[in-house]
Amino acid sequence: IADEIYQFKDWDRKKLHVLLSLDPESVDVTKQGVKRADHDFANAWTNEYGKGRVFYTALGHREEVWADPRFLTHLVNGIAWTLRDAPPARPAAATGEEGFQWLLQAAAPPAEWKQVGPGGFKLDNGVATANGGMGLWYLDGPRFKDFVLRLEYRQAKPSANSGVYVRFPRVDGTPNLPIDEGYEIQIYSSEPAKNATGAIYSFQPPSEVPQKPAGEWNDMEIAATGQKYTVRLNGKVINTYTGSRALEGMIGLQNHDDEVAFRNVRVKELR
Image (cartoon, rainbow, N blue to C red; front, side, top):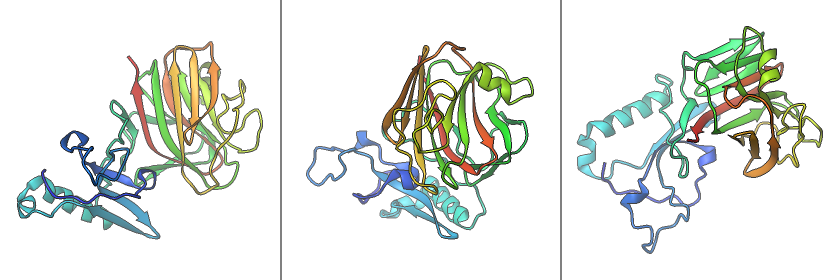
């Protein structure tokens, strides 16, 4: 779609669910007046505000756009979502996220997500919230070898306990086997400790814990290449660990009695 757009200088992708972004190849970013140094221009997004929902689109300046069925579908679905009549549209990948595939971002989880152990996860508007436990919600089927895993998490209270499991080769009906054969990247306390947030659970503590206060979203990245594991929290490398376990396996999220929410879980396989 070709249309006149606005530039939004101060918007923050981390606070919004971006639906559409401008193709940077379609714009001369060296022109005077281009405001964003990262060349990341969002055109449409959704957001939660209080008890309501907000849908915004910058499209629709040109008359011919209103005759385009793609725009009309976009508009109607956005309105339906604000009225809670439809699931949120799939978020667009941010600049620098080419090659990532979404594991969790829809209003209903893929059939491959399965729960083992007590408790579980409640999914609402693309946010999976842990309850009860201790259990594991895992993606059954695909095995990941070398990869970069990105997600956002939010603790309901300080030191709410959860974790991200990677490279466990089997489950066999118990949440304990994955932690014995794979690795758990801990979500827990900001206080320096062996098993603080960002720790390779029971193996290596993080160097620091730049975790945000309870109620705010944190960005976590886990990279696995060979036996090297690198954990980033809110943009900072906080753990680099050399392992000795399986080089390929599944990915899962732990529920451990506390309320911890996850969203925007996506992975990029490294070839």
